[in-house]
Amino acid sequence: MYQVKKAEKGHITEFDLELFTKSAKETEMRRLFHKMLNEELFTYCFQPIVSAADGSIYAYEALMRGNLPALTRPDQILQLAHEEECLHEIERLTMFLSAKSYATFLSTHQIRGDELLFVNSIASQYMNHDEAVAYVEQYSFLQDRIVIEITEEDSPDLTALLKKREMPGFSGVFALDDYGSGYSNEKTLLELAPAYIKLDLSIIRDIDSDPDKQQIVENIVSYAHQRGMKIIAEGLETPAELLKVLELDVDLLQGYFLAKPSAVPKPVSAESVAVIEHFRKHLA
Image (cartoon, rainbow, N blue to C red; front, side, top):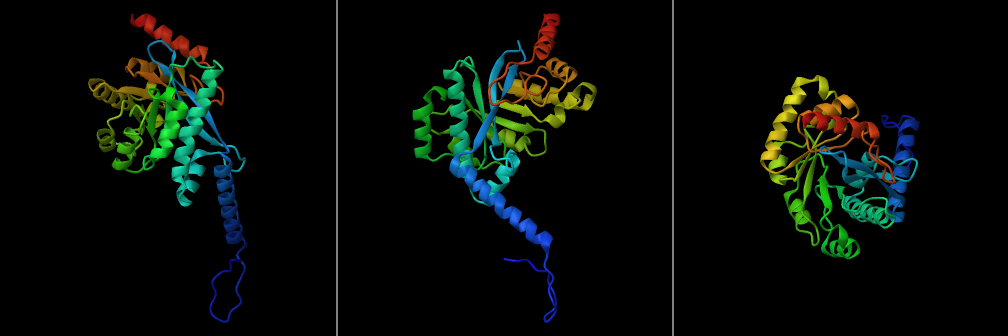
């Protein structure tokens, strides 16, 4: 339908090209989104989560990317999924396709096989019984390795979280993402009872020169360790940031300084391992 600017009755209306172009673009994006869903045009890049104890790879986080040039970013995809009421399909595809990639890496000896797999999940969504059973039948070897990473910015859906925790064949282990961002707050922490807390990069950025951020991390680490939770510092980009979070006793490390996300698993950078080893040597 052509768009026209509002005018008084009996007056000539003016064609609004800008509005028409915007509408056409939105229609095309929706078409591409459904093509992506129907043809499963997704890639999952894997970024190592590294042990602060020795620099070894503890886990991989699967990060969704779209395979169409106009639709690659996960925030774009999730926004369209929300608008088109397709969040469940995104959840199902993420669970299955990330596991499929992990299985390929395992069969081709690109990973050791004991690493955990962190999968970004939509807090309000969960696989139905038949989907969960099919998942377990195909990927039973992942039963104790999957960590469900909750990323939704809204308040958690407790019913959905309980369903995730009780899905057949799953470990029921959660990671709380973006803690300290303003979305993942204390209420969410208490309700989710995660095994892992991922500190938001807004806290990690320049932490080596910010005493307030250091105090925040020190407090969170103390809280988590008293309850058997592990702290992940994500978004690490410099040797100084890495060294500081090591001093603050975080458990796990993630960020471009250690390794960038890749469709094929890559080793941890030699420079970051050297920082960890040097720190541990002088701590002993």
